[in-house]
Image 1 (tube, one colour):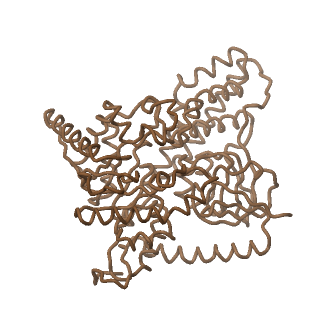
Image 2 (tube, rainbow, N blue to C red):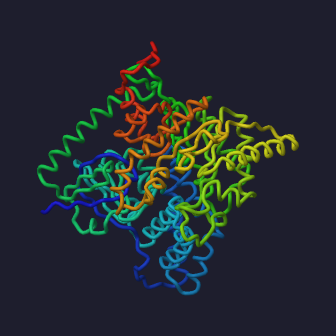
Image 3 (cartoon, rainbow, N blue to C red):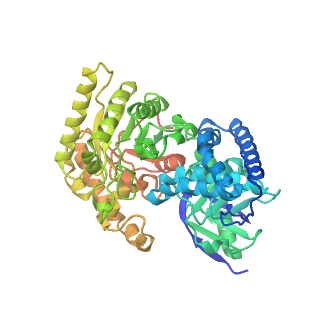
Amino acid sequence: MREQMFSGTIASPGLGVGLALLTGTVSAAIDIKPGTSDDEKVLFDLAVQLSKTDLSQLIESLDETSANIIEFQLALLEDDDFLAPVIASIDAGMSAFSAWMSMMDAEVVDYDNASDPYMAARAEDYRDLQARIGRRITGGEPELTIASENSPVVILTDQITPSQILSLEVEKVAGIALTGGAPSSHASILARARGIPMLVGCDAEMLIGKDGDLVLIDASESRLYVNPSEDRHQTFTSKLDAQRIAERSMQNLVDHPAYTLDGVRIQLLANVDNPVLLDMANSQAFDGIGLTRTECIYQTKTLPTEDEQYDVYRKLLQWADGKPVTIRTLDAGGDKPISGVTIDGEANPFLGVRGYRLSQRRPGVFNVQLRALARSAIHGPMKVMIPMVTVPSEMREFRQRFQEVVLELESEGVACAVPQLGMMIEVPAAALCAREFDADFFSIGTNDLLQYTVAVARDNTQLSNLLKGAQTSVLRLIGLVVNDARNMSIDVSVCGDMASDPELVPHLLDLGVRDLSVAIAQVAQVKHIVRGWGKSTTQEKSDDRL
């Protein structure tokens, strides 16, 4: 067979070799002739009861984070009001299958139309439940089963649901590749937590094959090879063996501080895309949290209340256990729309009302978040920063607004505090004049800084060569910010993808960066790189180096 190569978007990094297992989701296009209304309602009720049993048993075997994802689905099945439209449709003459699939399609349409990667996590939960009940009604298997006893498999499919991920025997799965999906989905989160390499958004031609084809998945280079050549297979296997040896070595030191060869202490902090990930991460491996993206808590049908946000921020501080926690205020807009908050119909949303610019125009929403942050700041060393800062007046206004919120809470007799207040540097105008901003700290967001420097959207795969080629320009901007921060005697960290890039971490260290906020799954690798870096210039020495 001829070798085929497919590309995709990285949802969970890693390498894997296995045999192809092609599968698919339940389709609403299946034509099922309805029986009597009573028979269809009995069939639907049986499917619901069996699925509730399936989900309850699954929850009992899961960690808290995974269980929370599945408990949402179980709660839906226990809600008579939620199921009522299906019963009504059956009474109107529809089959149980068609009534259920149609109702669930309507439930997810609002999320899909938002075209927001974070919304995919909630839409995915509905699709997961839709497929589960659909399979039960049609007599199919409720879970994704893997028959292979000896060779691991690479699952090739259009979508995979969170419950399917949770039901997999990890040792039997070398990787997953989807034609659909999103890196921010619950399935992607769970794949990362379980160390399963996964690509999303692959070409649909990937599914034109057969079970048992040899597959190489390189979810670090965004590539998938089906029926690889002998040379490709041999080279890939050597790379995989080397990675496994390196991973074992890195894991032995992951809970220890990171020192360079010259004894310089480097702070390794966690990037938190979704707080649920922390339930599966060891806080001992990190020096705190360097970036918390709060957009995920806004991905509900109603905006989060002050108390709901307070609980989330307090738990972050508890997890860090005395180490610093940096929380970014809502960074909506651009490619992250939020219903009822972001502005619809902007001609160019990446250059429009996003980040702090949006917060200024939504004072009610912003005030709720600031109150929750001020209240939770009493529980530990919190740092709060605003995104998309362009001119110094924005930072001055933010500081004044936060202080007003604290005075308001104090007048109400509510315990609160003013944390360190800083800013994201992701706009070249801010990077060039960082010294002019009244900030307690800087956090350099390299993803946006890169796209705004190069004038290329970061998700434009056709121009990815320009993004790669412009890294030198961005490193120069980072050097300017580091120098300004040093002269101002304030902390500066890098929290974008560059901080987790094995090729770029040494360059950041060369520039004087000493705080790196990295993807949770990459901390061991970054610590390994730090421990191998050294400079001949004079550095502070430490006898405590490992």
